Image (cartoon, rainbow over all chains, first blue to last red; front, side, top):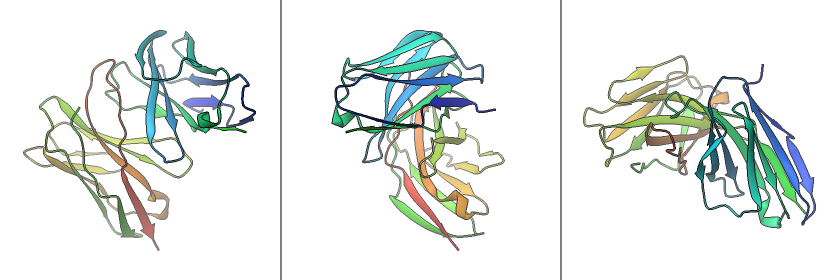
Length: 113
Length: 111
């Protein structure tokens, strides 16, 4: 069983389109996260939800909107995609304060053309 | 959270121990030392963490100096599959605190 699963694994789309990435975890964690890894390989946190409540919201364009229907799911919707949005997006989950470590998904490689 | 300093890259021979250093001279008393790694094209993977005492699990050992200003991650018998970027992160465990990744150390295990 995959602990943190993201779909799709690859996403190629044109500028201006709207797309969503889905994430699900079956670990019973109550906190989930979205990270972005750009071409320079730096991992940066974007959002964090705890029990469906937004607790971390980094300086991210408001074209990015996370949605958490329940504590096992955290989806990322991106409007009006731009070339600079091309990156690998990782979903992760943890217990409340992250004290036992985060579990990451395998990533979604988004390419905007 | 305190900042960490790691060497940009290291090489290790297959089968030998890989010792990855990390400096965190400004660490405070309630900050944990965490280690993660990222194998090419995969998501980061939690390895181990500790506060004061040395820790060991099935993946690695973590040695923290008595003054807690530095630590070493030890992979006892490195394999080619251990080639990855290793991140040392210092963090207070509370809700809402971010896990912030630096540049890490690229470990290359060679046959």
